[in-house]
Length: 219
Image (cartoon, rainbow, N blue to C red; front, side, top):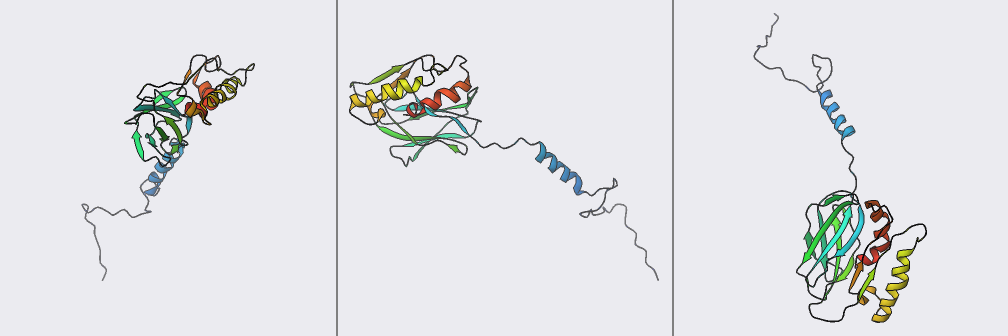
């Protein structure tokens, strides 16, 4: 005796993995094609890179600005302290997109006057070397200042910055201050006008001015 089984029209059929649709391809195929599309056309993930190493601006007795440039915007901060172990963190806001990269500006506050600090800048997974600076004094005392200008590099003057700074200002300041480090001999730098070649675009600062000056602008 044979038995006949009839499935109710209202009972949904279970879709098994690998079964074929009415169009003749497995149910997994659309999902696989979507994944391949995402992998092929998603923007590449680029590792963060520092374009301009940190340099100092407006250093006062209790505050200082740390400025640097990166390829893209990301979470950024400055780690700082009175010893190489750092220990303090100041977070920054969104960067400013320029032709010299994304510029970050973090203001450190609550500093002690006439005190040496260590710091480094961090953007995403990229971080700078640890540098140092000294805050301004809060009591009157003699100051040593350095002024220079026309540091642009061209074919006729390929080493003008080195001539002005490394062979002139640095050794003279160190000798007169009876110290070995220029940071201890000078309280501030003032660099006025004609910093890069005639074009003056962001690429000149990224590739020319800051690579030649970062040893001193970071302190």
